[in-house]
Image (cartoon, helix red, strand yellow):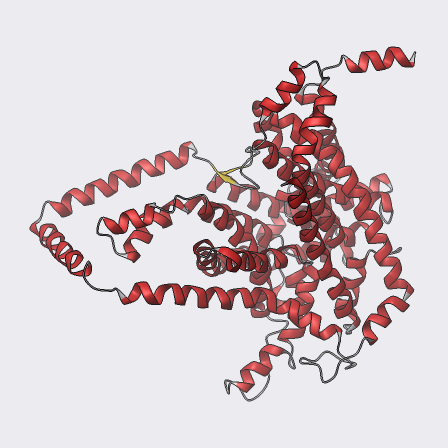
Length: 595
């Protein structure tokens, strides 16, 4: 019987749909059903469905103010990240060699560093005796500490710091793909540096601007940890309102309503700006040309042509043209001081931004060796007492062990489901265009919406406070990361190698195991590292479904940050800083072995 089953299995040719089915079924069951239950809960009980809660949400002034404050916060953070991130990405793109690698590393490490670590660092830095206030008083800008912590300003600083890499990396990805000869060609035809940048370089980077803004805005409006830790009571955002309704007032219907309002804002934003999630090779976000975009482009081109003709019908245009030609001829024979000063200014700006990104981690590192019994920077003396405190406290060790166990199990599940799905979708682009948005839903939807949906669903399934519930929840996001990264790796894979193996009578499974898998193992390892970091660092969903039992390490850190801040958290944060560093080292070693 077993030989017959093996013979049947060897002759089965699983199609792309079959390979993507396990991941799709997992997301639809673990996430889709709870989302459906959440929507039903927002409408009331099954026998009394109504829109009363939605009506109350939009008509009551307190809720409307929270909604408006959330949209404003997302818009402000997105704008600040764009203003700060574009020159930084430009500076990294214009740098080469070791300096470029160092600059990129200083962006990637904060990107991968625990959200709680960076939030805790800003609590230390923005306090009355923190680095920021001490610097202001040292410069003579103030005589007494300024209240920054627990204000909207403090929340904005922390959110911009955390979101900045999400803006820089898409911009840098687009800039690296541009032809470096275009701007010099424009300069050789008479364009000045500023005009060449504005007419050539900037328009070509618009897809990166669009992707970065979409990504930052979606994440910012769903932020919970950072604004809750750094903001004040009057700066409550929609994510905090949802958490309060679930954990304190026990009004799950209002929490479900607020969650779907937040989800509606996300969907509307994606619809307006035309995000394309169907590409398996362009990363998390790609810009697509929609019908609305083409119509707007045609209207703008028509307006531009009309003003162009009206302007050049006058003699003023001819005079300006002759003046520009004379200036260009004169510029050929003199050294433009702007060309000398600009690279220095850009590099100086990049240095300040990179210091802004990496400084909180350095502060936490220094604080972990402090001998002071309270939070103060710089430390008056150094000691290992907080590391001893951590390793001698069974609650911290148990939390660390539980986080490692859940992260390893969820990463293994995410890799199995994600690699199969990515391989199947890569073999069927038509299928990918429909399934990729579904597989990416857990990382597109604001994390607070995911958390409250899973809470409602897992309550009915009896998974609240269980390790199985945490594993399933963390596997959701891990599958999305693995699919994204492995799909991008498979997009550059030469399929002729696989077809050559099949032409030599190799079974598809053998061809995949002996040819495809070794060539894409670096992408699988990168996906596994991202899935592990996602699970090990995750705190919002874990807080909702973890219950009152044994906590994960991020859950315990968040609990201590909210109730009793002590320097032991600095030691824990320093240990968490090792996670992205070890991940990057592992990826680098794998890349060298591959080469």
